[in-house]
Image (cartoon, rainbow, N blue to C red; front, side, top):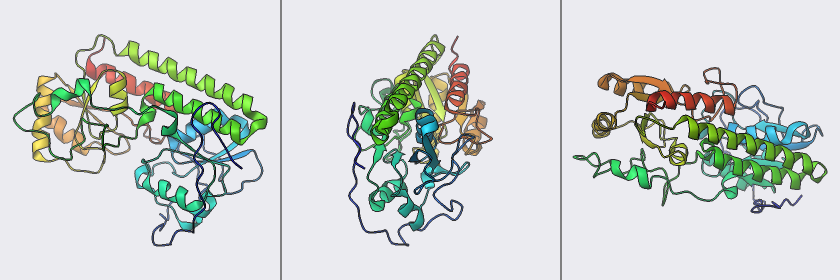
Length: 345
């Protein structure tokens, strides 16, 4: 079935290719079949032809699954490639999963976030895909408010080559966390609504109505962030992982991260000294960590500086450790954490 996006850019048809080798797509045993339950409490049953219960949608991870479920409603069966508690960046797929991916009616994913998914979509031969960034305009992160924290602003020691803590985009950078900007996420929601409408014309009005309602809720969330972050003491916040460039740019904030885009990377001594200066000069009193990743590195820095720690969640998945049960609850918990850390009144 050929799917085209009526209101925005067309969906991306993929030519069928030969199946991948077992070596290239050696699957993680914990994932098992493609139809794993999705992150959080809203997961539905698996894909691969389904049982005829509506449009069969595969989502690459939680933010894409949330859109498909909210917009598709009762007309879709949604499964996620990532189960609760599994790091989505590290996802690997088995040949069986890749083959079943090609049987889905629609795949909703974010290019560049999960390399295994990008590769599997090309190899599976799936015809109908909705790629999130194709519905948004590109953004150069790190311009303007972030420029002062490199070689000139905090001074004696320049940031290390390859450090991605405060330059989240632009040429060659790859911050994929578009869903942390409610305005951009609303654009993606409208695009997914169009994709579902094209995939299932009988329910097109419902999909577009649901997409519009979700986009409106996201715009309300944006308004809450704008109002909630007014009259703040500082613009700077420190995180363990450079995941919040989109959010920082949207609200005129400055993110400094201990690690770069890779949450597993270890900071150098030079980077830790640089963060000491940032905290002192920008009146930072909190180091944020992610609940799913633990607080070891953030706590080390916080202890050295006499700062407190708190959770700022990138909403990559919903687990028992998440500060909320869905995207909106977690994002509003993030807002309250930022208000406290930035001294907003």
